[in-house]
Length: 88
Image 1: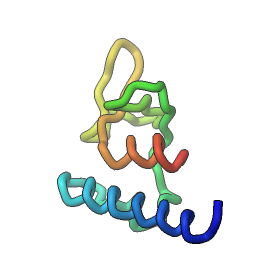
Image 2 (image 1 turned 45 degrees about the vertical axis):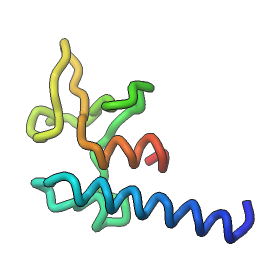
Image 3 (image 1 turned 90 degrees about the vertical axis):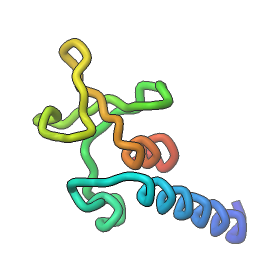
C-alpha cells in the first residue's frame, strides 16, 4: 500500500473513531483513545457485528459488559470498532 492510501486509511479510521466518541459517554474518559490504544480491555472478536467477547477478569465492573450464560460480552461501540477494524 502506498503512503497516500495508507494516510487516507488512517484518516478514515480517525474520523470514524471521533464520530463514535462524540455519540457516547465513557466513564473511563476514553483512556483507550488517550493511550493511543495501548490501554485496552482484553476482548475477542467472535464475528458478531454488535459486540465482542470480554476477556477481563472483572468484566462485571464495566458499564458496557453484559453476561450471557457464564460469559461476558462488551457492547462498547469504540472497543468493538478498535478490535474489528484495527485488530487491537
